[in-house]
Image (cartoon, rainbow over all chains, first blue to last red; front, side, top):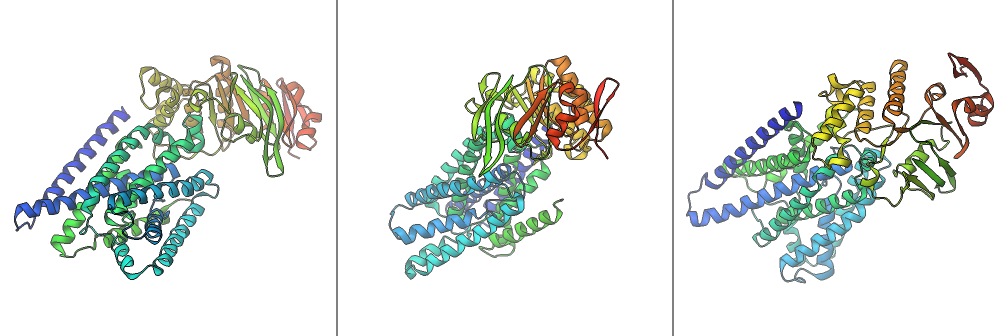
Length: 319
Length: 252
């Protein structure tokens, strides 16, 4: 009875979120459109598509990461995932140069591949041991993030100024300068990651019980952890490449989703988090563009709110 | 049936389980006793594939624990560790439903629901079934975890200190339940116990460990004696027979 009831409520919440997203999207596409539609629709459509993609990617990456790491304070951003991605970007520019790959999509795939590899080596080792508990993990993540940033800054000093400028433009979260050349590829990757996540769903639910219980119930913990981390690295790469680092958003939307959804099941939590993220991004961009006439400040608002959320969560955490 | 051959666990130079070879009886309640650090939990963890073994082998129903796929083993062996934390809010019914995962892979059918209802009833959890795990007492939570392991419907169940955090009343009730699971349902239960008197009153067989080795194994009449207990714990105790059960006085 209870499960049927919570199932109904989950469906209601998801439906409500979907309606809200459609409303926000329509408002985003139409409000203040006083130019020719032939220009406005593709222009805003690209932006909308990238906001939706980034929302899906960030929300899924965060929920996945929180499930495999077994706590709900860590996010890929706090653990230095996007700093690692930027370090790899910088490293590739130093090693090969800005024009080395020619096609930006090829370059993006190379960066993503390197990211998946490094993230796997680093974080699987860290999470599989997880001996020191949450605080050590958090500390390692923060220090790792700083280390990666310092390393990329060090490498940037050695670049010639032209290369540096090219690199720098990709470093700030910017929803106004989306890379249309990457959009289709990014959509493909997010879709693939989504399908892979779908197949992981029952195992992800079991992982909520912790490593030992998951193994006891026959889940190959190491394998599932590896698969989930590959997906996290992929999704972080996509969102960082598209708009720059906004993964702090994940903390915010994951917790909103946990609050709204009356079940632990990932089949419901993941879509809810993705919807909340998309609504937040599209709605936030709409408000910033139309109400405040500020451009490019969305990431600041998100980081501010995300930071506050983290502080509240840390302060409220029992023990 | 559970069998180990020369099972060993080392951390660097420290040997915590030292070449343990055991063959445990089926349809029995087996207690593992020993001082802190005697290697009890490590032994259980290796048999339950939670801890890689440094040397030796372990078998459950003749299946080699190190090479058998996890999901095959999960239909034969249920495990419960000491500290369990769930990273999400789940109800007791949800938790017990997780016990069906090895059979259902997340899609519950009528038979699964039957096992869940049965486990809830067996542990007297029906009135609490829809409460969240973080809203019930420690004893109730412990019972919910036991219900999950029972719903898994395995012949063998390994429990690491199932009486942890339980008061006298709940500890006795828990041991009664486990005993019934053996007597009425033919399960084999192996439990690490710290309370020697519970081990003595409820076990068919007691495995006594010290310094990573099994120093004695047998029914309570053979193990619960001043001589064996001195060898196991290194203290002098008095054994008194109360109502036909051998009990140990060691408090002063």
